[in-house]
Length: 528
Image 1: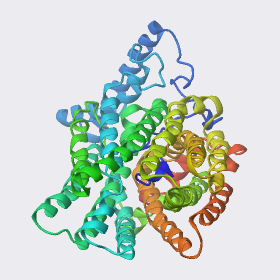
Image 2: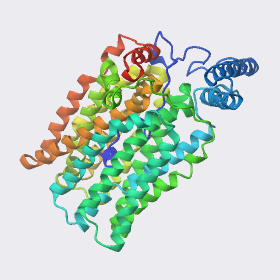
Image 3: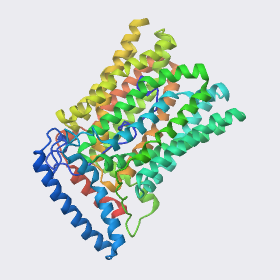
Image 4: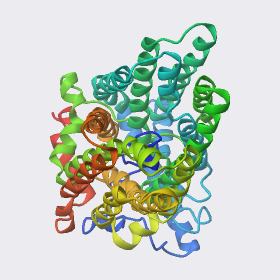
């Protein structure tokens, strides 16, 4: 599948997600915040009345911040000033969303320069990864002369390392400021991937080095994903997270649409080592933007005075997901759907090049054409959420995204096959791009602030451990049947994934506040 010839994401929103816990108790899926915030689809009030209310609210916030600061600092003037500054930073994103003149739509991030810096950082990094897609495997195959099982082992070991270190890493990230974690993760990615071309110029690259690099990169990716969600929430505010997720999703699909074809040409012209170097530089280039974000970052949650064991705190993210009926369903659905896609991608490639008879350049062109679908879907994601509601988007569009994928094995030969596959993939990915921001938004809505990083880490670990199993299963299928017949098996897994969509959410509406309160009471790190 064209969308997944690049990085296998976790079906969230690009490099992170946004969330809020202040949505209306009556119907969380209509994206209507409670309190003083306006509806997502209808900005509230006149500019003059809003300005007066902003001034009053700001004065109240400052008085409350000063009172709280004095109580927790013992009245020390310096400490009080620091605490007041932190309290103001916690409200900066939501205040920016409410200020008249910041944006014609209070639910939009348009005109938010800090978000645009995050968008550019994400876009550059995503493009570098899409550009260098497959380059590392080609290094293993062409330069290291690794056997097929050794390439599979490299992927499996990196997934295992991410699984072992991912959960405790999520706990570590939870209690730290997220922006330095994002910067550190990008620096680690740069150093890891840059080591391959550097060593390749000096001596021979070895399989051991590739395994180490892939493992380090996998752990750094989990760290980035763990911090990204909470950071985006703090940056854009809860009211604007749907728009932010859709815009980050657009950047992802643009990168995946133009990155692989350009990367394939680059591998042919300059070789896989130089292409990996481009990927490394992309992580460094993204660092030009993240440190320039000026909006104050709120302080991280503080652990309880009597902290439970490392294991108990590390699995708190999984516990929250499993105790939440809709999140549990979404994770199981994502594991099956995403696993089927990772299994489908190499099978579809074999069918296109062998059975359908497409040339390599047609294969690359189809990937770009098909990505027009998700690009359009990501641009319409915010409107879909406002029109239908989050749960409705997740359920009904979640069903729609598999319909054309199960028809891929029916592809004819030649250009007719090209058109058939591009149409099936484009339609499927259109709905995928609509559900991805909805999933990231809903997951963040239903997770309290002090669990955001651990839930993101648990989600990423579950997928990183699961996907290689599906890839291995797809490889075994090619031994006993043709790629076209193996795609029918994949279609069965896709249909099976629909069973785990959050249907109960259509009739049982739990508010984000209720979910957060329940998580507070069951989180072992917060238990007295």
